[in-house]
Image 1 (cartoon, helix red, strand yellow):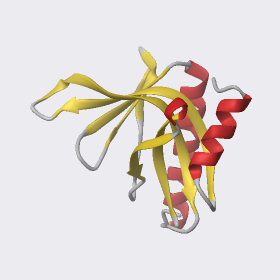
Image 2 (cartoon, helix red, strand yellow; image 1 turned 30 degrees about the vertical axis):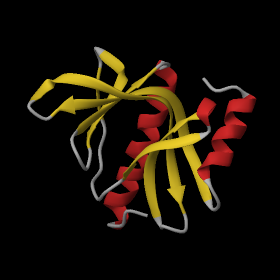
Image 3 (tube, helix red, strand yellow; image 1 turned 90 degrees about the horizontal axis):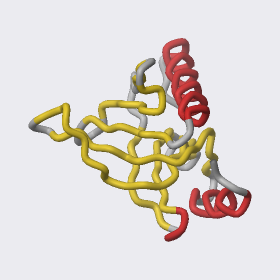
Image 4 (cartoon, one colour; image 1 turned 180 degrees about the horizontal axis):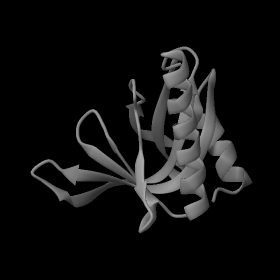
Length: 132
């Protein structure tokens, strides 16, 4: 969970005309392309579901709050979905541009909230046929 000063840093990193719909502290994991059962930790930071108005798109963006920097992003493509399991509810997995990724949340409630926002976006896309 982010405190007030960490939230301020996150909002300053988001940039002009971007809003955070959900955020959480995570480990970003990458699946080994040769063995999908092997995960490698790529980064640790705050992931944000960002609506970027100038780009007219949604993104998952990862920030290292204490270094004041942006480190990774994944644009939410058409039919973007995340998966989770009852045995590991803190881990959300999805197919990214380069490989399978996992977001391992430090807090279960943040993971549930984040997935709910992504599921809502997917449902809206299905109704309207649009991604944004």
